[in-house]
Image (cartoon, rainbow, N blue to C red; front, side, top):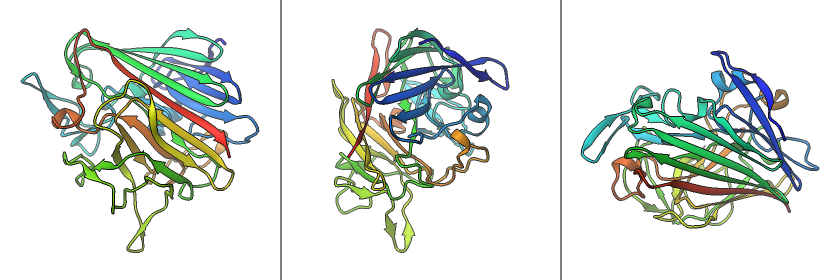
Length: 337
């Protein structure tokens, strides 16, 4: 299926859209940020992700809806790390003191090149030059999205570099399975026995703590809405599924809607899963089909390495060296009860 023109960026550049389909699932992908823009399941009259109908809204108002974030998805404290004895300073794009999701532009705001298009898959490529946002080495990344029957999105991301660098690429879709104003009544299960606590700036402290007896125990399904001392708990934490990558995708999380019985099962080769409940969504422009997006309109479940890993030797390594290949495979499978 050929790509169509989705629109023009305010700063110049043409965004293309590719529609993928197999079984009961149809997925729209755009070249801006390798974004999954829309996901539709046959017989369901609403999108399953949050997104926009125009490129300008993504550039001006998107909290990373559907994007591939990099070169390092997640946060790096003070934008600093040391690699092979050499210090690096990255751009600071969050409160002037944190590097978030690759910096001021990042992969989520770059135009990716189309490498290959088929009816059920697309391959997009991005070259990030040495020094971009402060990162060392030229990095070449590719993402392949494949729609597999009956209703699964398979994402494979690979990357190579010509010099030692750090890499953590993640898919930042916000899911809403029943088109409700918020996802707080969705039920969530996370197959993780530990999590990485954070400081006031959401930077991991370096500890790995058990979820047992804590507010982070989602080993059995629970509503996203959890209360403590009469107030709702806000979730934006990395859950530790394992301490190393896996050769093949393993279960990470299962999200379900009691309202319509739809479920989403996520598997990945990554060791961590970032659970963000969307509490800070506040989009001033219409979303897909004119929808209004406010706090908790969608939930993010992002397979990844751990946040701030370049500064914590005990975390799974994010270092990529020449001759090595970064590879992540994650699947997002929708089903009806």
